[in-house]
Length: 332
Ligand SMILES: Nc1ncnc2c1ncn2[C@@H]1O[C@H](COP(=O)(O)OP(=O)(O)O)[C@@H](O)[C@H]1O
Ligand SMILES: [Mg+2]
Image (cartoon, rainbow, N blue to C red; front, side):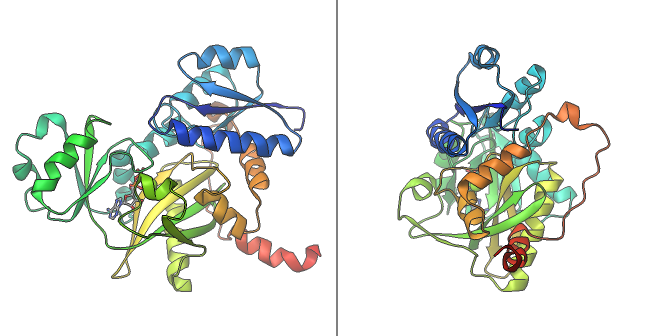
């Protein structure tokens, strides 16, 4: 294990390049500190050449967004026969496409806000398309992350410009019912939940600025929910992870509405991994250090084409945090 050469794939071509660089550098440092042989692989259009030259044994994907989180790089790694962290080609592309992901959530009876999708060709008659869908609603490019191009609209006057802006990032748009409530993000690792964080921006919603500006958002680990509600949220998140066929670490974004219903927004297959990102925060509260988390993610690296067909996955009923707490007295 220790003799494997690990390539941390970072940078990339998406709008989340900057975030990816931070994630990748944090992972690189953590794995090096733990004695691994690690090289950075800065991803651009020549990534195939870099991958061949470096002769890595395993890839740690620290790329966010298009081409890095959506199955593209995963497909290249499958072709090259290099095991990689996280979800395979299919799960990555399903999770990245918010429309397809929501279709699967519905198929699996997972509550997700009502929505419709539209393309640039359908924007001539917005009033007709929107019909009685109502306000407020949320406009999102169908395949983005980090809240890039996301806007909350209170009226038809706001809808047009929001859709126009979102269309700068993708040619298909998701318009979703706004859910007022507590925003909660759940960490899943190898088919078990690690815990969750409640996200409370001081102003507005959890947009790009509130995600990456220090002090702009308050975080609560665990979320301020009743124990029953908390368990329910963790269970739904795990079902969302499984519904898309995800592997490794994911973070499931959810909202617990003011009336007490849970909604799944999306599953992130390459969650942010700086020491202050949400997944490491949750892991830390479960007794897993940042270095250990990277190590656990690395241990799960594989090739889907070598995993074999007909693999049956069973949802684990225990939570990693609980295991740790239970194990604690014996380890001293
Ligand atoms: N239906 C919704 N109701 C209320 N807020 C929402 C809704 N959808 C998204 N948001 C807000 O927008 C943010 C980004 O949306 P999300 O679907 O998670 O996309 P991204 O991939 O950009 O993170 C969420 O974290 C939340 O603050
Ligand atoms: Mg999100």
